[in-house]
Amino acid sequence: MVNLNGVKPKNGRNYYIALGLEGSANKLGIGVIKQPLLDSTLTGDNSHDCHTEILANIRDTYVTPPGEGFLPRDTARHHKNWCVRLIKKALAEAKIENPSIDIDVICFTQGPGMGAPLHSVVIAARTCSLIWDVPLIGVNHCVGHIEMGREITKAVNPVVLYVSGGNTQVIAYSENRYRIFGETLDIAIGNCLDRFARTLKIPNIPFPGYNIEQMAKKAQHKDNLVLLPYTVKGMDLSMSGILAFIDGLAKDLFKKNKKNKFLFDSKTGEQLITVEDLCFALQENLFAMLVEITERAMAHVNSNQVLIVGGVGSNLRLQEMMGQMCADRANGKVHATDERFCIDNGVMIAQAGLLQYRMGDVITDLADTVVTQKFRTDEVYVSWRE
Image (cartoon, rainbow, N blue to C red; front, side):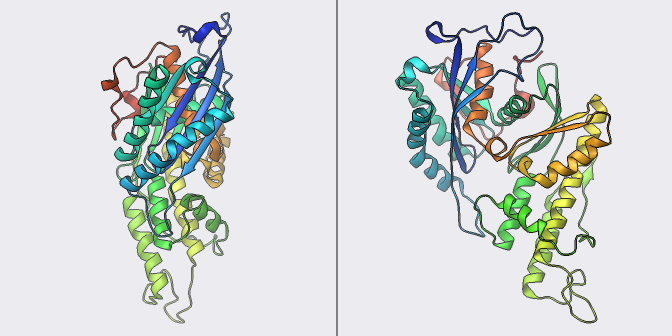
């Protein structure tokens, strides 16, 4: 049995409070959570049901004009400008008057992510730790997504599909590690969608993937799907070739290149598909690839549950397609959350960090707080699970 009460809360309280700071990409998230001491009579693995209470979940996004991505230096500047203000706002919302007394641990994203934004946030975390004399915990971004998803959905031991702007992985837990069964060989699915959104020059508000999802719903020729490359290689997948192909189609569509037989009728010159059709085809193609490798992982570990985490996990069409696959399996079920928890946020870092803290995993030397752009999910020793 795992004892999540190994480290007692501050000042003889019967609950823990954690502050989480996330800034691995263009979203700066500050979260405050509260967890009670678990009943000492409980047995087994209870890390998916810690009765977490969310006291604050504040987020601010660095948004660029349509057709543009976000550069590390500009994103880092945004995080520096907003971090202190968001921390103050989160503490006020959580009704924390004296952080030195009230907060048990400060958790920050140690990686993976963009170097400059990560560095901006860890400086804020170190500063708060020194001023308030509160211990620090470095959190793997991917593990933060997984643990927040498990806590919100109460999924006990699902196969995890982690889909975001920087990562695409199929994961299953085994022997204190989140094992990666399959992943992208080049770009992540969120990056693929974002880059296609740039080609279309559609707004980045609220985020590009959401806008592509809305455009896909308006597709006029869903029964005549645009054929795109389908690149699954064993348990892995590749999306760069798909992006290059559909980018070419979109550019020919904008240029009215009637020599392209995919887009225009060769005899009449009539336009056969729309931008919305391209968005629909891209989603269907990519999501079908994800469903295939996820089902294969489920068969391998004999599981009937899937937990979808990461920003792309809030896409309702992906949830629907995964649900159709799970419906064909005995008692199959899809677990997913909405954009509050799928998209990068501070509470997910606080959730994973507090689990680490309760197992006695605390940084004792600031030299160990160095952030890294490369931090594999399976590098983390998951001490809080059996």
